[in-house]
Length: 187
Image (spheres, rainbow, N blue to C red):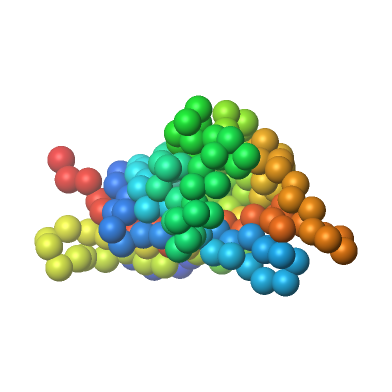
């Protein structure tokens, strides 16, 4: 670890980490009926984060079970799983694989490839490194927050539900928010 790393990321620890889904959130929001936002989550996901000695060489590889969508309304969730939206019968997972980590002052971005419905597009996540430290079970944990925006239509989720008087029921812009807690692997 270099001295600049210690200044930028207090307590930084290199290693391989498993995402703790019980203490993490993969969420999103989308404009609904042109007046509000609906929030949803995926309840089943997994991933590996590798924090390298040089943080810019770090990586992440994550998979989300598309069938685990939860918007707190079962009828809507069933529709989102259908061919109109995610087509879960043919596309069971969403994946993210990082291609780069970039420092910008005290801020970080993670660049990577997001695949939804078999369509892969580059995305950039604004990353906040929340910290590293011991847990109550003798292990070590790390925390990260990340955000990005995507176009659902760019990933083949291109249903348009027009409203009388103009506008659409579901907006195109999807805000993705991640709160990730990960556990350091032991040998």
